[in-house]
Amino acid sequence: MGEITTKNDSEKAVRFAAETIIENALNLHATDVHIEPRDGLTMVRLRIEGILKVANQLPADISPKLVRYFKKLAGLNTREKNFSQTGTISHGGARIRISISPVLSGEKITLRLIRARTSLRKLDEVGLWGENLLLVRQALRQPRGIIFTVGDGRNTTNFAILNELNTSEKNIVTVEKSVEKVLPGVNQTEINPKIGLNFPQSIKAALNQNPDVIMIDEISDSQTAKLVVNAAMRGKLIIASLPVSHASDVVPFMENLEISPFFLSANTLAIIGQNLVRTVAPAATTVNKLSKLESKIILNEFGITAEELNKLEKLAQKEGLGGKKLLTTKESLNEITTLKDSAEPGFTGSTGIFEVISFISHGAGDKIKSFMLTSPNSVQISNFMQKNNIVPIKVDGLVKALRGQTVIEEVLRKTGL
Image (cartoon, rainbow, N blue to C red; front, side, top):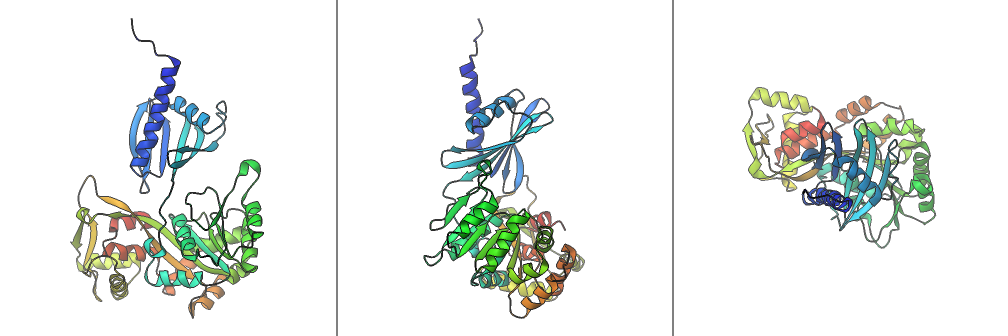
């Protein structure tokens, strides 16, 4: 007689599958897990260093069982299948944000892994260096105003900023969608839309706590935007993230939220735009020599002269980025770091590539403020940056590729050149 599988055995199997998926994701340092119903199977993909990779393919019939398991675990409605639901669970030392949404072939599960005791980087460890680092620190010395952060990795930069500001002399308050990093000495708050605690209410509450610094991890509505500007006008230093990709998008985005160019220009200290590129083990890279034509094409694509790039590379070398060898001269770009031909390149982590628009830098600050009063669009702002020697994010990436911190393929992938 064949073995009869009981309901209890089935539940144990689903629990084992769910825990195995999570443990595997944590061991591989994934940030997100996607569990997707597909034709004839259940696809499990992990986002590692920003890239989605297939981790497993499970039988199709386990997908609804995993959906039910995670819904029960997060206290969600197991009968609701027509609307998205979100919740939070704990697993060992990690918090996991669960999002379950209906798709054509069933329901899709997305898990966001938030590790406890996540180490905090310093400003010079997130990818800021040279003029960009000086401009950010100049903004942080101001008693009031807004520092905007945008792009991939902005939360890490936000906490590097808070880490630098965090002294016993300052009262720092955060308003966050979800507390992903714990910073001792900082009063962190988390919004809870289920009970009506949204960003505007949380910011109003923070302002009643006599803060010196407020960090808001997303401005996405007019009411929040107006509260942030008013807080800056009342003498608070604000660190605020926006859901846009480029520094040049900040002014148009805030205008769309009914903030006038005058108030934005008068209260902004700096805009920090960034993206994340993967770092690579030296053994997985090679340095390729370039012909004069190849050098000219690359320099044209990045909008920089060989002499300007050589100055930046020398400064990066002086600050300890990469090895001793220079890959540029005043006349040309001679060599470039690329990946070796390998099926499994040795990616080791990630670093930021940056562009910083300072509204208070000596000489340039007034020019930038005046320009922003004209309500420029994103393209006009990008052109202004290039004409006024603001190092664009793609050039920061190119310098990091020259210094061996990443490879040219990564810079091209993330900047869209």
